Image 1 (spheres, rainbow, N blue to C red):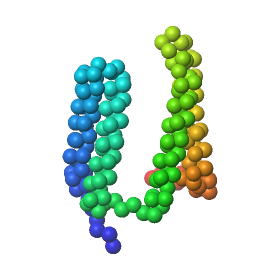
Image 2 (image 1 turned 180 degrees about the vertical axis):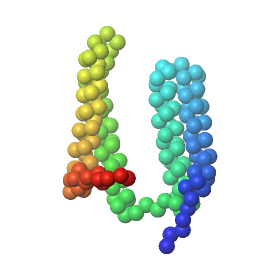
Image 3 (image 1 turned 120 degrees about the vertical axis):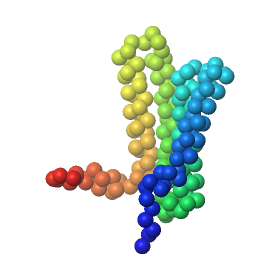
Image 4 (image 1 turned 90 degrees about the horizontal axis):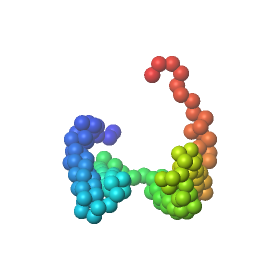
Length: 156
C-alpha cells in the first residue's frame, strides 16, 4: 500500500517553487518593461509565460526528486505526441496570425477584429484537435468514451 502524503505537506514543501516563479515573473516584467522599453503588454505576456514555465519545471523536478511523481508508460508515450501537436498548432497559428494581421489594426472596426480573433482561436483549436488525433496523442475511441460519459445523477 502506498504511503499517504498529506496535501498540506506537499503544499508547504512546494511553497518556495511558487515564490520563486512569482519573483521571476516580477523581475522579468520589470526588466523587459523598464530596462528595454518594450510595450507593456509584451512584457506582461513574456513574464507570465516565463513564470509559468519556470513554475512547471520546478514543480516537476521537485515532485520527481521527492518521489511524488513517477511518469508511467502512457505518459511517456503520449507526451511527445502532445508536444508535436502543440508545435504544429503553433506553426499554424503563426501563419494564420500573419494572414489576419491587418485585421488587428487600430483602425479596423471592432466586429472585424473580434471575427479575426475568433478565426485565430478557432483555427488553432481545429489544427490542434486534428493533430492530436493524427499523432495518436488522443485515441478516437477514448474521445468517444469521454463524450459519452454522463454526470452522476443525484446529489454529489
